[in-house]
Structure formats: structure tokens, C-alpha cells
Image (cartoon, rainbow, N blue to C red; front, side, top):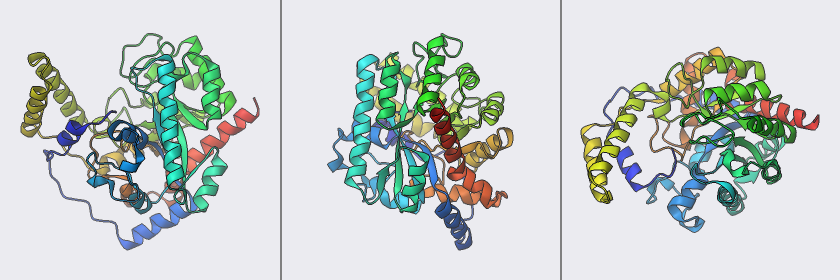
Length: 408
């Protein structure tokens, strides 16, 4: 879910259909326990789309987005700002450098470079808060210094334009992972949300995985088809990641990870970083989203060339059909399922903040990570396992990928 606009936010802010009792707020002792864990191990989020929102909604003009202030009050509200990052105890962030799926060739590569520059500008504007990281050791060092380690996560392999030299160039730029494709199938990788062409990965797609292993770039399997997941796991000699995906067994959305793949992730030593987006994590919200999309398509057919009529009609539909609400317990369910099938060594956090139009209650923005950890504490998770979830598993996978690259 990308390219959020004013209409999307207006729809997202309509009162949800379901109300329920709020979970008991975290106690002082619980928050102190979270603090102890996250002081020792950086909380690493696998996916945040802030750079794209600044580019799309503010023309890339960072003077219009003060991250030291509360960005919820902006014309296009954001899930991310520095005070809330500190409140959420974030230690490291993979900032998505997103490639719109419709772009191809040189235009796609240019889009990545623009996003990389946006992230670099953020780091330069707030040097006391952010520092670029190029390795697992960098992440640990920056976290210990009290700053937020910042990494590039490249979302969409179309940008390499079928050229491994361009892939290597992005790695030299500091890109630590690449999502093999986004919402559309490419010439070498099948997308989860498009018609398959290759039955997974093409022979060149397998070469891309091998080269990513060789140069120390994490293979990200979010957005790819289940067959592409299986192909990549068969080929990769380094741990793979899913930067923002959830459990197919709980919600059979094609963006999610099937149990047989989760078992392969365990064997591979990879990490599935759980997405917070309710459409991927709650069946009732997935159905509501599908119904809303169908209504939007109907309105466009009935009102060709009249976007205002479509907007008005869709707003009325949402008012009459409020979005079902879920809370953070659903996200904890996905974490627990992945931990049960793949292992507690193979799960992490990949919020998708600023890449989705709405979120579960209790995970409203980057300030709310501790609430999720408290929920898992109440389910019996140990400090050791919570530290693995927070960032220990990702650091282990990244270090192993670095060792594979060093031995190539």
C-alpha cells in the first residue's frame, strides 16, 4: 500500500465499525522491563516508508516536515517523528527506498536514487538522532551511542534493470536489502499480487539471489509469490528476510508467508519481520478492503472522468460501511504463529509505518512499539526471546550474510 493521499487518510479516519475494551495500559514495571531489553538490544524495524511520504506529499521538500515536531498535525499526517521514535525506543530503522511498481528501467533506478537522497537528507538534518549504518556492527555501535541506526531497504528489484552491475552499485551506495519485486511481476520474479509468469524466479532471478549473497545484500522476500519465496530459499546460501510480512495461516492474503515457507526460513536462518497493516493481518479487514476496492471500481465505471463524484461516493460508502477495527493483539498473534512454526530465532518487527493508511488500535505510530512488547510479556515471552524479536534475530541474520559475502 503506497502513495497515500488526502482521500485515503480521510477514509482511514472514519470511525471503525467495532468497539471493544482497551487492553490494560502498560504498568511502570512492564515499561521498565521493555527499557532494559531495548537498552541492551536495538529495536530494529524492517520497513518504514517515511521517505516516500515526504517525496509524494511534500514534493521532497523537507523544510515542510519538521521531524522534531508532532507530524500527526501536518496536512498529510505521518506515523513518524523524532519525539515519538524516542518514546517508542526505536534503535534502528530500515528506511524503505521504494520503487513504484509501474516504473521500469532507468526511471525505476532513478526513483531509488531519489529516495536514497531523501533518507540521506533526513540523517544530515538530524545528526544527533540518526546515523547511517552499513553493517551489523554499525547498528550496534550507533545504538550504543544513543542514536537511531538508519539503513536503506530497497523495495523493488525492477530498478536493477536486469543488470547485476546496477545491483552492485546499489550495494555500494549502502543498500542492505532488496525486495525482489513489489506489487507487479517483473521479468525475473513473480509478485504475490500479480499473475505469475516464471513459476517463482526465472534463471536470472536465481542469479540475482546468488549475487546478493556474494555482495552481502539481504534477500527480502516480502511481496514475492510463494513459489518465488521457495525458489529464493532453495538458492540462497545466506539468511533471507521478509522485511514486512505476516502469517498466511492466520490470514490467507497472498502477501503473507505460508507455513511450509516458514519452516524453510527456520532451516535457512532467516527472519520474518511482522507487518502491522490490518488488511494483511485480520480477515474481516481484508474483506472490508476488498469490498471498498470493488465499490471504488464501480464508481469509476459509473462516473468516467469525474473523480470528485468517485470521491464523494466512496466517502459515503465508507460512512455507511465503517472499517472493522482490530487491536495490537492480532499482531501479537501473527508474531506468535511465526515463532511457533519458524522459531523464536526467526521472527522480527516490520511495521510498514507510513506505508499504510490505517493501523491497529494501540499501534498508532512509532511511539507504540513498547505496547506490543508488553502484550507479548503478558503472554509469557521471556526477556531473551523479546530481545531476539526486537533486533537480535536480524543482527544474527545480517552477520551471517556478511560472513557469506566475506567467504565468496
